[in-house]
Length: 300
Image 1: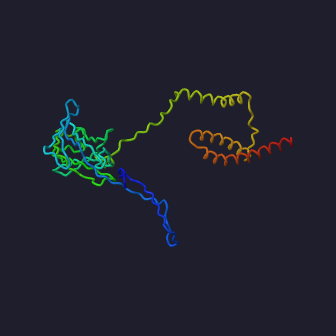
Image 2 (image 1 turned 180 degrees about the vertical axis):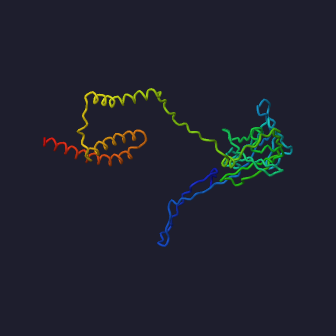
Image 3 (image 1 turned 90 degrees about the vertical axis):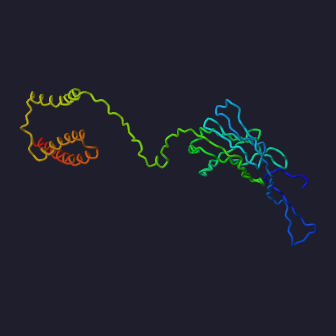
């Protein structure tokens, strides 16, 4: 090829045709092939150091070249930030580039505990990694000591993805370690707080004297009825003592009593069930009583 394309994935269109027609062979026109153009990456301008968390002082950075390791360990306490800057270049073009994976791994040399952070590029394609040692102490388990700093770079189009031990870092966390809180499983099986339901408060009822007053008003017509009967001199001597007459009046009284019981304690379905039986008896007795009264009037 006269020109070498930049790294990436390309679709190549291939056409094959016969110079001389041959019925045994079939040509192919416009076949699509996926081609990956690889490149080699170089890491440059690598700087590792510390700066105060409040950034009141200038950062202290030391330069290191790949694949060497920084000879002097970097020291950082809980009031500082750990910093690393680097740039990635395409070896064939010399241009700055970004990759899919750029990680910084810190591994405790005593316990082999690994903590991995992501390095992000800025608008100028320069990668920068910085952590506030104090605020990230919980991720390290508040374990002070020497950590190995390793840069991991990888991409689908890189022919030389690498893992590089850049430096040793001594981290010193605060001596005051907060008490460990309950784990997720402990939260899962721990007693839950009591759920208190707030039901609607019952409405205030009037004083008993009001209820008694209206009960008296309801009974006034009945009392007035008996008083008027006494004044008029009602003659009950002609009251028939037949089964139908007694059954009708007892049934009618039973219906009124049933309505009172319904008001106090029965529900509608229970009341209908009892009313059906009492009503049938009252209807039959009343019908027979009226028929007898009509017959007696015809005779007189």
